[in-house]
Image (cartoon, rainbow, N blue to C red):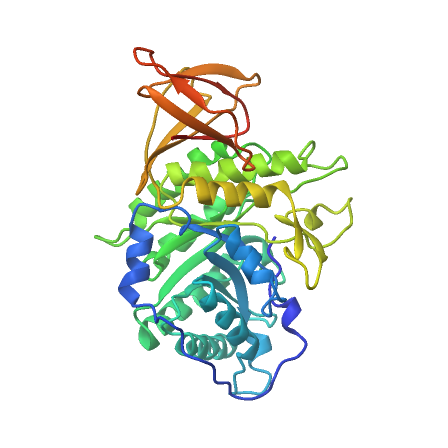
Length: 426
């Protein structure tokens, strides 16, 4: 669903570019360790964007939501307008803004040109080499294409994709062996598992440092678990010996719709609920990076679902703080990032039926709990917590009444619903 490169077609400078060095260059081992470590909130959260030149106040608001990553694309056909000369000026501007807020990028390598012939593949790889050299030490994760199983022109062609992805992998390992390279940004679609298996059989796991998928679904985020198990089992079957290759959710979101669509009843409040649960489920399953789709609504047409995936509304308000009107999803992202700041997932506490989700986290300020249910009805559970005073916060940041667990009680009696609640001891 992510729209790459369309916003880059204007204002390109046809010249070699220079830019300030990153304030703190990222050593290759740092981002490799990032992928292999237990995810820590909010460093493992990101969002898809459709710009290279942020508007005043935009990055500040984006960072305030707790997003530490952005996902966008570098389009070869828009950086090499003159053969052999590469212009990364718009991307340089984006990276300056990212460094200011200590953020990093997952950059998808795409093009509007055909890539069927060997000559074009070689030219594409030369463009990749130029980009990787230009942004070395920026902590970029390089991703091979966007949803090639449905977006490859003129139709899906797994063999052509594999040829290009292998060539790009060899190029990156040759010019910048420390850089991270991932793929295939797999779309949830019929035949996607066969496409992924073919990629693995062809040896792409020799080059990929992570497998990126887009697990969109109409059902709740909890239903993604079998997919993660399948992909991990497939990785274990085809990965070279000794390689630990994680799964990244590179693009996944839910829209807020006000008219009947495929996403029936996905209101703005339900979108916020889905965002919180998506991130929480991925923390539970050790996904090192989750990229929400997307940052702001792409338009104002209430009948166009593609216009409704944002965490903030479409209209930009210059000179105001905040510069966009936040949707409940924005508040949900910010709340999760602040309530679980510095925390890592510890375990799921089994209480009641399988549709109850009680996740324990630990961080520098002690334990935190996130709790919700997929049951149709709100109901009560007893959390096995020691006596004391506890503060509850709902998924959009509203602080609820404090609850006291007296000495001798079994624990905290809590009403849980579809909306996650965060619990911490005061």
